[in-house]
Image (cartoon, rainbow, N blue to C red; front, side, top):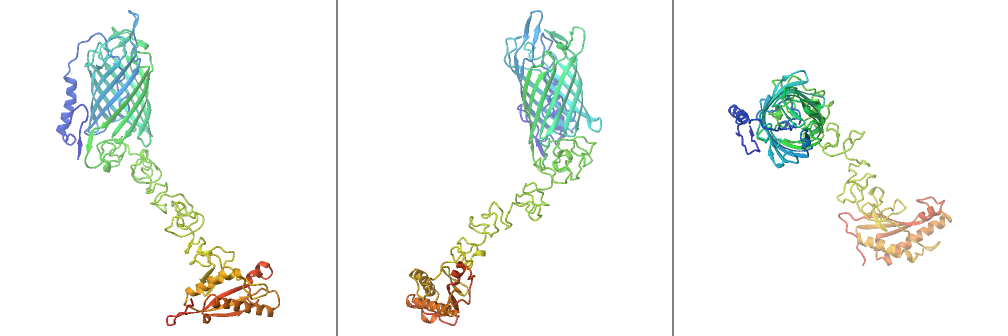
Length: 615
């Protein structure tokens, strides 16, 4: 159910007003009674020159009414403030002086009540807050004539136009001496034609105003033909409207009435804007007089606010037309009830809204007219295919529908965050954006190539991936410590230096040999190590063979005597120049070939005892 509560004017309406026909009749009677309880006041000198008569709260236009009535049991309340500069420049030719000059400030409280999407009643009470008019010394606040009225949507005039009518009555509650009342009632009846083409709403009116005849200075009032027109351009999916409006009247010639362009045809034009925020309607107006007739301001500004005074319990009704969103074919546009579900809740019931993509969302509300989509609270996404992550790539084509991404020619990456190296770790989190890597708990290593030992040399290039080491130009030693066990070898990254053409170990290699001895002491499971000597190709083969054998034996002796390694764990052999690891054609290659290697020949098994260590 929906509960309706009128706010403002200290009037509270029956909570069941919407669902009770009796309550609706009471609401009608109340509004009509306002127009009957005040008897006309006898005419006094002076008259109201105010031609600026804003429409009722919630209307799409400000100077000219709308032929469409929206809502069934919908109360609107509104407030406005307007400032007019020199709105009443009336000159008394007999006294040769200006009667009304200066500026005026008005405020207005209004309310309206709609029934059956066809009939509306309204009341407006203006109050002049201040005036600098010279006609009266009393320039303070003054009540202005009360306006009550009713408006009806009669029916379609053409396929796009709707015909309506309005009756307004002014009750002389103002002050004739202060220029805020005629001193007698006024009656205004007019026909209205409104419609919509594309994103433009328009309205026009023509009517008859009955009021007393009088000349006040160079101002002529009396029975008149009224006219007005306006257009409103919907922006931001019809949440904002902008447009021009014009309104005025032409006083008819008659006995005692002096007519003329400057005396009897007041016309004002304005630029208006309306902004919808939920169930609130905010408005602004800038206007000016288009004729020199008294009553037209040289400059006018108005601010207004209106709201549907209701509390909703149950299904939502976004556009406030009394048709719940689930059954409303035009849920974002106030419309009328219709037995055809395709038209139910749409502005013109005899026209099915265009829906080119067939998604059930009318084109004028569809942000993606050519592509079937779904409903959304975001006007820029309403009617578009779902895009959960909001990256502009629809979920159907988005390889990462829940993560904001970017377009890609590769379907598996389309809509995913950028991953330049293709390692599955997005650039925003990848510490090595251009190098494929692996996940890591360390943000500084996440997305970088694996480096298990953390020595800064990736496993792919690390000859000792599980032991921290140093970079080395020899790929077989790169990433290894000076001494390390690699498979079945004790690999050293430095060279054991000997005296030229001799097996004498130079002192600079003592530290390296000490590390080898320490490693063997720490790994007693290594039972036998073969120490192998190699030379370059200089000298003859016999000498090289002998030299490599002597050098291997010299290392074995150092490890036993000074490194305290058990003799049974070591053997030595020389291979001369027979096993080169580089070319002997360059000094660099020959330097690499002159080497000593340590190969593990035997390790302790489960049933064997480890080798004893000598400390």
